[in-house]
Structures are given as C-alpha cells and as structure tokens.
Image (cartoon, rainbow, N blue to C red):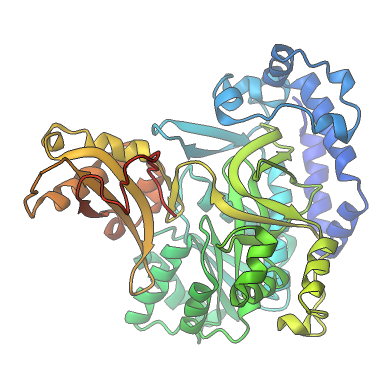
Length: 501
C-alpha cells in the first residue's frame, strides 16, 4: 500500500488531533512549499503510472525537474488530457485504489461523472481550513456550536466531505454537534427547533442560494435566527457583499466579518482556501471602492477572495486562470481547474491597501486586537469555461442544447440560447435562458413554458449535481423568447456565447 499506510495515517491523525490550530499553521509556515512541491512531483513520477506515461509522451525526463523553475515549465494537466485519458487506478499513487476509503463525484458536461477517491487522512488538510473558520470567525473553541450541514448528501463532495471534516473538529475536542439534514428544509427546521436551545450558536453550511431559502422559509415558519446566534458557511458560488449584508440582517448579525464565511472548494481538490475576517473586511471595502477593486483585480466584477496555505494547496496562474497542485489519492500536479482568478502574497495585499490609504486593521473595520493569519490570497471569479453555477451545480450549455433540439421545437427556434443566473427582486437566484426564435416566427404563449419544462427534464436526466443540489421548487428555469438576431442576446457578426454572467 502506498502512502498513506495505516501506520503513517495513524500518525497523521494523532498529530492533527493533538496539535492546536496555531501550532499546525506555524509548522506549515516553517516549510518551503516549493520544496514540498518538488518532493510530490518526484513521488508521482515514480509511483503514479498515469503521470509517468503523461511525462513520457511529452519526452520529459523527471530527473531534469530539480527546481521550482523547471517544475513551473511542466505541461498542465486537465480533465480532458489527463483525468479522463487514463483509468482511475492508474491516476492513483501506486497505481491502485487500495488505501482509498471514500469517493466524491463531480458531473461532467455530458453527465458522465468523474470520480475522486481519497483516504480519510487526506481530509486533514481540509479539516484545518474548517478549523480556521470555526475558531477564527465563530470562536467555536469557546462556544458550544450546532453545525447543520445543508449541502446535498450522497457522493457529491459538499455534504459528506463537510460532515467528515466537522466530525474531525468534534473529535479534536471542540464543543461541536454535527447534524446532517442535508438539503431537506423540513429536516433542517426540525433540527434547529429541537437542538438550537442547547447550544450557544448555530452554523448553517450550504450553497448560498439554498441557505438563503432556508433562512427565508425558516423565518416564515417562526424560527428566530437571531436568537439562535446563527452563523453561515457558504461554498460553490460567488456572491456580492450586498447579498451578504442582506443575509446578515436576516440572521441578526452584529459583526459581518465574523458571522459568515465562504469556502473555495472543488471535488478534485477539496477545500482550496477559505474566507477569513480579513478577506471579508478587504472585500467589503473594495465593494465600496470599485475603482480600487478594478485596479487590483483587473475586472469590473468582484471575485471571491480567500486565503490559502501553499503547503497544502499550491497555486499558480496560467493565462489568468488558476492551476493547483496538491497531494491526494489522485495527486494534482499543475492541474488546471479552469477558474479565472489570481494570487497575491500577504505582503503585496497590504502594500496595495496602504497605497489606498489603509494603514491598520481598524481602517478596515476590524477590531484592533484581531490577529490575521499571515497567509497568501487567491481570488476567484468562477469557472473560466462556459458553465454557470446554480445552487452549487455546474450547469453546462450542452445540457440545454439537448432540450432545445427536440422535434417539438425545431420549426420555431434557432437553437441559439444564452444561459445565465439572475437575481430576482427578492434577492433569490433564478436560472434564466434566453432563446432565439427563427425568422418570422410568431410563437404561441405556451412555448416558453414548454421549453422550460424540456430544459428541466434534460438537466434532471443529464446533470446529477443539478438533480441533487437544486431544490425542487427552483429547478424549473425561466425562459424568455427573443426575435431572430436580437441585438442584445444574438447579435449578428460576432461569435455567439452560450453563457453570460
């Protein structure tokens, strides 16, 4: 059995459970992440058959990769040319699934899943990210906490991965109860009503739009979220600071930078980074100063901003998209995760803030005695490919195309469409599809509803994330018909884009 063996896994668990969070981060800070990266490369070149073949095809001699500069010249790996090109066991350390005891699944554009096996020991790096959130943001080392996992349960990465990491925190000694109703609102409300009176605070963990649904529906059913001292943990979506403020008001937040946080995670890499009180304070300041945000991120939109540990997840930037390397049962080496974004060192971030006239934590609205973690930053705009994210599910244009190609519609619509997620007047999320009519077609009033039903049926058939992540009442999209060559959605003479953010 290749690492982790039982003895080394036991050592890893014992070390994690017996070592305080501060000490874990100090130990990692003393390491050289680039040297750790080179050691991982060497192990993969020796022990991962798929990566050996990947290098051989490109005539790369592993012995020549002896510095970070040479490592950074290696070709990127991706789902198409690596993860889907080799059998699953060959992508694992030792060429075998032996040693992996759990699996996560992510849906591809055709609905075919990609499987991501891992051992429990590899969850410990991710558990540290959860520990940062629960300690630094929620003071869960000092307050009894009811953690309510609202992610979908099953093979999808959000629910059980979150649950397992929270169990690790409880085993480590934090006064934490973990409840797992999943994305069943009735069960969530039953858990909160019965158990919240026995705890100092309640933490809801889930996809942002679903958590909002829970808060709104719970309030309508008489749950007093403020009395529960509710905190929020999000993942899977980029949201605005205005949206955070809205939810903060609904849970009675008195410290916006400490009452919610977002995780940056993927099925393949686990949690790659996490919002901290510092990143939230910076992001909230930037939301009020769009010119400064545009200068910093070179975009007019505001990305998710998190901190990360380079000894756990090592980021590089390639053509304004993120590349990550990380140890796992299926190791990631210069893996292109197709998220648009970038990285900033802790020093560079503070240099930029000082340039804007911000000299202290108090200038950002943080308490003067707050101690930020000296960790680098990664910012994420979302997928750089043609997906949109809805309730944490990646929605692909290919799924919609199948619905629009039905014989019922072939004489009425062109097949062109624009897929987007819009905010409603009540600050909920809505899956919207703009559909182009054929020339001179006068559609009947029932056509949008027919198309919406067809799209929903195909999404349920093809996309397991959509099926399990999206609440049933949010699965029917909104469809708007536009005339042929509509200048806003279907202009003539330019390459058509099937998604819009």
